[in-house]
Image (cartoon, rainbow over all chains, first blue to last red; front, top):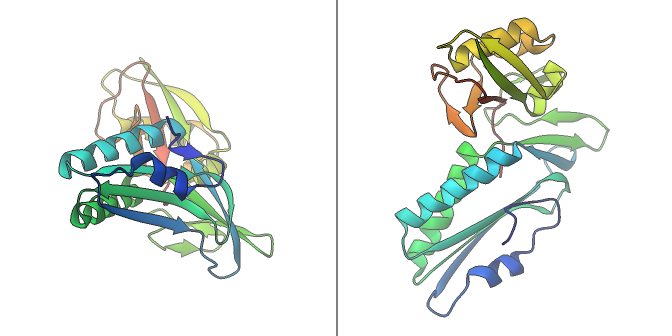
Length: 145
Length: 82
């Protein structure tokens, strides 16, 4: 069984190999990659591992219930990930493309809302910043209000 | 009294200066009561938000959820996975 959390490079080929099959004619792949924002050299990803694994199981079960003909898997990488390398890959396969796209989209949106994983941007100048998606920054750190 | 394990992650672990602690709260206490207790008790945790995102036994919950003896409460900074 594949680990949904990994510290190694993500292999999309390997994920594809696990869910493609002759009756699934449409496969949708989403890959999230570390972006070169403003001097970012890498991102350090950390997780509440036990909850992240449980939450991924719940999301994939929900996707299965919503899109019964689709099969979805996902892998999230943790640790230091350089710009340009993948932090997450989601692969959804279904008999037809509509369900594959919908299931893939459902899972990435739930990941963004629910997965207990955090990013710390590591800058080329040696500084680092926790990422707060709400975007409320204060000097020396980020605010959570 | 109800004894609960509390875990801190990412920036909250840096602020609290630890990754885990345990607190005792009166029977019938909520996750919000645990947060208040932690903010009083753990040096550094006073700078955590009053109403952080929280999980109880691996599921996100509201702060008015009651805790039981042996539960694990986690205080979660804004999520940024993906």
